[in-house]
Length: 250
Image 1: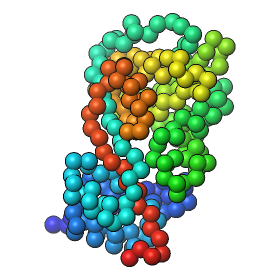
Image 2 (image 1 turned 30 degrees about the vertical axis):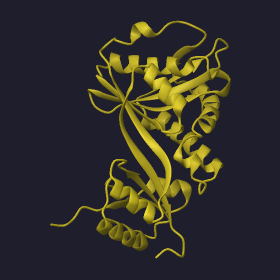
Image 3 (image 1 turned 90 degrees about the vertical axis):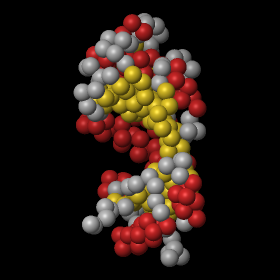
Protein backbone atom coordinates (compact mmCIF):
# COMPACT_ATOMS: atom_id res chain seq x y z
CA UNK A 1 0.00 0.00 0.00
CA UNK A 2 1.31 3.41 -0.96
CA UNK A 3 2.10 5.59 2.04
CA UNK A 4 0.31 8.96 2.27
CA UNK A 5 2.46 12.02 1.52
CA UNK A 6 4.25 13.52 4.50
CA UNK A 7 4.45 17.05 3.10
CA UNK A 8 2.75 19.49 0.79
CA UNK A 9 3.62 22.80 -0.83
CA UNK A 10 1.74 25.81 0.59
CA UNK A 11 0.93 27.68 -2.60
CA UNK A 12 -0.53 30.78 -0.96
CA UNK A 13 2.38 31.25 1.49
CA UNK A 14 4.85 30.63 -1.33
CA UNK A 15 3.27 33.28 -3.53
CA UNK A 16 2.90 35.80 -0.72
CA UNK A 17 6.40 35.58 0.76
CA UNK A 18 8.23 34.86 -2.48
CA UNK A 19 10.01 31.76 -1.14
CA UNK A 20 9.02 28.12 -1.66
CA UNK A 21 7.25 27.01 1.52
CA UNK A 22 6.08 23.54 2.49
CA UNK A 23 4.50 21.90 5.50
CA UNK A 24 4.83 18.53 7.20
CA UNK A 25 1.34 17.04 7.41
CA UNK A 26 1.44 14.65 10.43
CA UNK A 27 2.15 15.97 13.93
CA UNK A 28 4.43 13.03 14.77
CA UNK A 29 7.39 11.82 12.70
CA UNK A 30 9.96 9.02 12.92
CA UNK A 31 13.62 8.83 11.90
CA UNK A 32 12.48 7.18 8.67
CA UNK A 33 9.94 9.95 8.10
CA UNK A 34 12.49 12.74 8.43
CA UNK A 35 14.64 11.15 5.73
CA UNK A 36 11.64 11.13 3.40
CA UNK A 37 10.79 14.71 4.39
CA UNK A 38 14.27 16.04 3.64
CA UNK A 39 14.44 14.19 0.34
CA UNK A 40 11.07 15.65 -0.65
CA UNK A 41 12.29 19.13 0.28
CA UNK A 42 15.34 18.70 -1.96
CA UNK A 43 13.22 17.50 -4.86
CA UNK A 44 10.70 20.31 -4.43
CA UNK A 45 13.37 22.96 -3.76
CA UNK A 46 11.70 23.96 -0.52
CA UNK A 47 13.24 26.96 1.22
CA UNK A 48 11.12 26.98 4.38
CA UNK A 49 9.27 24.09 6.02
CA UNK A 50 6.54 24.46 8.64
CA UNK A 51 5.90 21.72 11.21
CA UNK A 52 3.05 21.71 13.74
CA UNK A 53 4.37 19.22 16.26
CA UNK A 54 2.71 17.22 19.03
CA UNK A 55 4.22 18.50 22.31
CA UNK A 56 3.85 15.18 24.13
CA UNK A 57 6.00 13.15 21.70
CA UNK A 58 9.57 13.53 22.93
CA UNK A 59 10.98 11.51 20.04
CA UNK A 60 9.38 13.77 17.44
CA UNK A 61 10.63 16.90 19.23
CA UNK A 62 14.18 15.48 19.36
CA UNK A 63 14.09 14.57 15.66
CA UNK A 64 12.88 18.04 14.68
CA UNK A 65 15.46 19.88 16.76
CA UNK A 66 18.29 17.57 15.68
CA UNK A 67 17.53 18.42 12.04
CA UNK A 68 17.56 22.19 12.38
CA UNK A 69 13.93 23.01 13.07
CA UNK A 70 13.51 26.18 15.14
CA UNK A 71 10.70 26.59 17.67
CA UNK A 72 8.78 29.73 16.65
CA UNK A 73 5.46 29.46 18.48
CA UNK A 74 3.24 27.48 20.82
CA UNK A 75 -0.24 27.08 19.40
CA UNK A 76 -3.00 27.16 22.01
CA UNK A 77 -6.44 25.89 20.97
CA UNK A 78 -9.38 26.86 23.18
CA UNK A 79 -13.10 26.15 22.95
CA UNK A 80 -16.37 27.04 24.61
CA UNK A 81 -19.77 25.37 24.66
CA UNK A 82 -22.67 27.77 24.05
CA UNK A 83 -26.45 27.57 23.79
CA UNK A 84 -28.79 29.51 21.48
CA UNK A 85 -29.28 33.02 22.85
CA UNK A 86 -27.01 32.29 25.77
CA UNK A 87 -24.66 35.24 25.29
CA UNK A 88 -27.12 37.94 24.33
CA UNK A 89 -27.86 39.08 27.88
CA UNK A 90 -24.15 39.64 28.52
CA UNK A 91 -23.86 42.42 25.91
CA UNK A 92 -24.27 45.68 27.80
CA UNK A 93 -24.30 49.20 26.33
CA UNK A 94 -21.22 51.25 27.12
CA UNK A 95 -18.50 53.41 25.60
CA UNK A 96 -18.22 51.09 22.57
CA UNK A 97 -20.79 49.59 20.20
CA UNK A 98 -20.50 46.66 17.80
CA UNK A 99 -21.79 46.60 14.23
CA UNK A 100 -21.20 44.50 11.09
CA UNK A 101 -18.28 45.58 8.91
CA UNK A 102 -18.79 48.58 6.63
CA UNK A 103 -16.49 49.63 3.79
CA UNK A 104 -15.72 52.92 5.49
CA UNK A 105 -14.17 50.97 8.40
CA UNK A 106 -11.42 49.52 6.21
CA UNK A 107 -8.68 52.20 6.46
CA UNK A 108 -8.63 51.99 10.26
CA UNK A 109 -9.08 48.22 10.41
CA UNK A 110 -6.06 47.57 8.20
CA UNK A 111 -3.91 49.74 10.46
CA UNK A 112 -5.14 47.78 13.48
CA UNK A 113 -4.33 44.50 11.68
CA UNK A 114 -0.76 45.62 11.00
CA UNK A 115 0.01 46.06 14.72
CA UNK A 116 -2.13 43.44 16.49
CA UNK A 117 -0.22 40.20 15.84
CA UNK A 118 3.35 40.82 16.94
CA UNK A 119 3.20 37.70 19.17
CA UNK A 120 2.75 35.39 16.18
CA UNK A 121 5.32 33.11 14.57
CA UNK A 122 5.66 35.29 11.48
CA UNK A 123 6.85 38.23 13.57
CA UNK A 124 9.00 35.94 15.73
CA UNK A 125 10.80 34.27 12.81
CA UNK A 126 13.44 36.78 11.73
CA UNK A 127 13.59 35.30 8.24
CA UNK A 128 10.37 37.22 7.61
CA UNK A 129 10.64 41.00 7.84
CA UNK A 130 8.26 42.85 10.12
CA UNK A 131 6.87 44.56 7.04
CA UNK A 132 6.08 41.16 5.49
CA UNK A 133 4.43 39.93 8.69
CA UNK A 134 2.32 43.08 9.00
CA UNK A 135 1.32 42.82 5.34
CA UNK A 136 0.33 39.17 5.88
CA UNK A 137 -2.28 40.07 8.48
CA UNK A 138 -3.50 43.05 6.49
CA UNK A 139 -4.07 40.71 3.54
CA UNK A 140 -5.63 38.05 5.80
CA UNK A 141 -8.11 40.62 7.06
CA UNK A 142 -8.86 41.82 3.53
CA UNK A 143 -9.60 38.26 2.43
CA UNK A 144 -11.77 37.79 5.52
CA UNK A 145 -13.80 40.81 4.40
CA UNK A 146 -14.13 39.48 0.87
CA UNK A 147 -14.55 35.74 1.27
CA UNK A 148 -12.96 33.96 4.26
CA UNK A 149 -15.23 35.01 7.12
CA UNK A 150 -18.96 34.54 7.55
CA UNK A 151 -19.04 37.76 9.57
CA UNK A 152 -16.70 40.61 10.45
CA UNK A 153 -17.84 42.55 13.51
CA UNK A 154 -16.43 45.99 14.31
CA UNK A 155 -16.31 47.85 17.63
CA UNK A 156 -16.54 51.62 17.44
CA UNK A 157 -16.16 54.30 20.09
CA UNK A 158 -18.53 57.18 20.84
CA UNK A 159 -16.89 59.24 18.09
CA UNK A 160 -17.88 56.50 15.61
CA UNK A 161 -14.25 55.52 15.06
CA UNK A 162 -13.45 51.82 14.63
CA UNK A 163 -11.54 50.52 17.67
CA UNK A 164 -11.35 46.79 16.98
CA UNK A 165 -12.68 43.86 14.99
CA UNK A 166 -13.36 40.13 15.16
CA UNK A 167 -14.00 37.58 12.39
CA UNK A 168 -16.51 34.73 12.72
CA UNK A 169 -16.46 31.46 10.77
CA UNK A 170 -19.27 28.89 10.79
CA UNK A 171 -17.49 25.62 9.98
CA UNK A 172 -20.53 23.35 10.41
CA UNK A 173 -24.08 23.64 11.77
CA UNK A 174 -22.70 22.90 15.25
CA UNK A 175 -19.18 24.38 15.16
CA UNK A 176 -18.00 27.96 14.91
CA UNK A 177 -14.56 29.54 15.02
CA UNK A 178 -13.18 32.94 15.91
CA UNK A 179 -10.48 33.90 13.43
CA UNK A 180 -8.80 37.30 13.70
CA UNK A 181 -9.24 39.62 16.68
CA UNK A 182 -7.64 43.06 16.70
CA UNK A 183 -7.90 46.08 18.98
CA UNK A 184 -6.40 49.50 18.36
CA UNK A 185 -3.58 50.70 20.60
CA UNK A 186 -5.78 53.52 21.86
CA UNK A 187 -8.59 51.18 22.94
CA UNK A 188 -6.53 48.51 24.70
CA UNK A 189 -7.46 47.97 28.31
CA UNK A 190 -10.94 49.43 27.78
CA UNK A 191 -12.78 46.10 27.46
CA UNK A 192 -13.07 46.17 23.66
CA UNK A 193 -11.64 42.68 23.25
CA UNK A 194 -14.15 41.18 25.66
CA UNK A 195 -17.00 43.08 24.01
CA UNK A 196 -16.01 41.71 20.60
CA UNK A 197 -15.71 38.12 21.83
CA UNK A 198 -19.14 38.36 23.51
CA UNK A 199 -20.58 39.77 20.28
CA UNK A 200 -19.07 36.89 18.31
CA UNK A 201 -20.50 34.35 20.73
CA UNK A 202 -23.93 35.94 20.31
CA UNK A 203 -23.53 35.78 16.53
CA UNK A 204 -22.82 32.05 16.77
CA UNK A 205 -25.60 31.42 19.30
CA UNK A 206 -28.14 33.07 17.01
CA UNK A 207 -27.15 30.56 14.31
CA UNK A 208 -27.52 27.49 16.50
CA UNK A 209 -23.81 26.83 16.90
CA UNK A 210 -23.06 24.84 20.05
CA UNK A 211 -19.25 24.99 20.22
CA UNK A 212 -16.87 27.82 19.36
CA UNK A 213 -13.11 27.42 18.96
CA UNK A 214 -10.25 29.91 18.82
CA UNK A 215 -6.47 29.72 18.44
CA UNK A 216 -3.87 31.97 20.02
CA UNK A 217 -0.16 31.97 20.84
CA UNK A 218 1.55 30.60 23.91
CA UNK A 219 3.38 33.89 24.39
CA UNK A 220 0.14 35.91 24.10
CA UNK A 221 -0.96 35.77 27.73
CA UNK A 222 -3.34 38.72 27.32
CA UNK A 223 -5.34 36.85 24.65
CA UNK A 224 -5.42 33.69 26.76
CA UNK A 225 -6.76 35.65 29.73
CA UNK A 226 -9.37 37.31 27.52
CA UNK A 227 -10.74 34.01 26.24
CA UNK A 228 -10.66 32.44 29.69
CA UNK A 229 -12.58 35.40 31.07
CA UNK A 230 -15.21 34.74 28.39
CA UNK A 231 -15.52 31.09 29.42
CA UNK A 232 -13.13 29.37 27.00
CA UNK A 233 -11.04 26.44 28.17
CA UNK A 234 -7.78 25.08 26.75
CA UNK A 235 -8.36 22.17 24.38
CA UNK A 236 -4.90 21.38 22.98
CA UNK A 237 -1.32 22.62 22.61
CA UNK A 238 1.05 22.19 19.67
CA UNK A 239 4.56 23.40 18.86
CA UNK A 240 5.18 25.38 15.69
CA UNK A 241 8.60 24.77 14.13
CA UNK A 242 10.15 26.36 11.05
CA UNK A 243 13.13 24.95 9.18
CA UNK A 244 14.98 27.14 6.69
CA UNK A 245 17.16 25.48 4.08
CA UNK A 246 20.52 26.82 2.94
CA UNK A 247 22.99 25.74 0.26
CA UNK A 248 24.94 23.86 2.94
CA UNK A 249 22.02 21.60 3.85
CA UNK A 250 22.42 18.00 2.83
